[in-house]
Image (cartoon, rainbow, N blue to C red; front, side, top):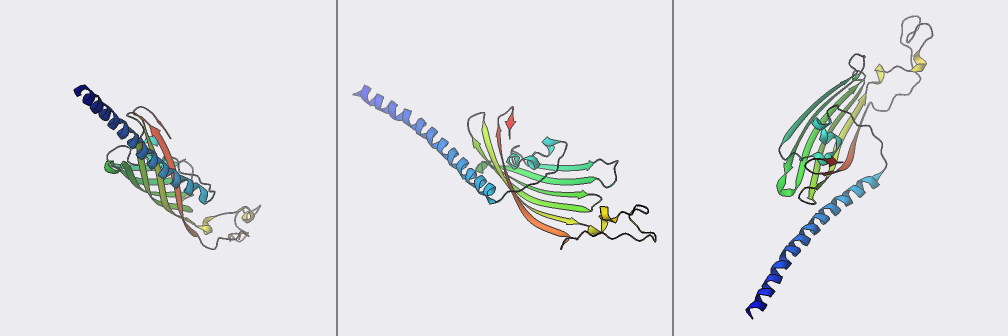
Amino acid sequence: MSKLRQKRTEKKRNRFPLIAFISGRMEICAGILHFVHILVFLFLVHTTFSQDLRFTQVHASDTWVNPAFAGIKGQPRLEINFRDQWPAIPQTYVSYRLAFDASLEFLNSGVGLFAVKDDEGQSILKTTNFGVQYSYQAQLSKRLALNIGVQGSYIQRSIDWAELQFYDQINPVFGFTDAAGNTNVSSQIPPSSPTIQYYDFSAGALLFSNIWYLG
């Protein structure tokens, strides 16, 4: 009888690790499925086209490249970026970025904040961008994890229409002025408002280990 009881006890002990393993994987799958639903919703809203700023040091601006990087370092982090593209050419592109992100280990998550300012053509076209980021980490194995991140931002763009020069303003003899030195008037119709405001949403995924990442 003692051997029979011992075998039953061993069977029960062997069941619990399997149940715990299955339960853990189900929780991971549920978390991933939740974010997949969010991604599907974002991409079904409408088709958009955009061109993001490019900073030379990708590892110093990784949350700008992909919101899934938010909180990945495990410690609070502050990123400051500056870009002056083609400084030898007048009316160039100047960009500033300030970002902060931190890890929320008790939620398997990361959060981030950022502010970006971009001036084009000596501030003829200005863009200001404020945003928040959130990422969730699913531990797939001891050495492999998957981060899924989402980002929402408020963007304001403004243009100084008076500083623009168009082809129909050019005089073959005097350039952009007439014989009296007055600026030639363009037939181009200015926008109803020099400033536009809108919201932007994006998402990203990151698969990584201790030695490599993909995303």
